[in-house]
Image (cartoon, rainbow, N blue to C red; front, top):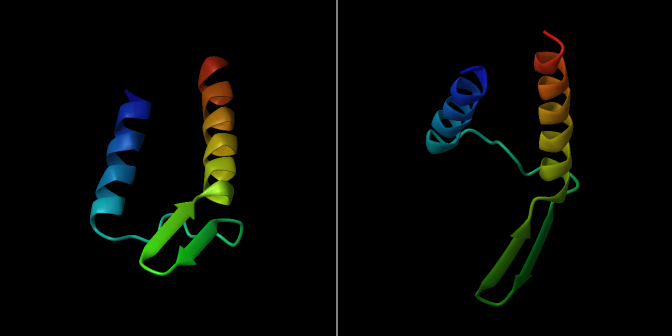
Length: 60
């Protein structure tokens, strides 16, 4: 239930335009009309946070 509420909260923040992502390690390549965005640092940060959260929830 906690994970569901967390996912919902992040979804609401993203839909409202909160600046989630765009960390200094994220890659953005622009070539003419094409833009490629790869959220490398955001993915690593999300992985660390989720790992710690799930480890904490698993101990209870």
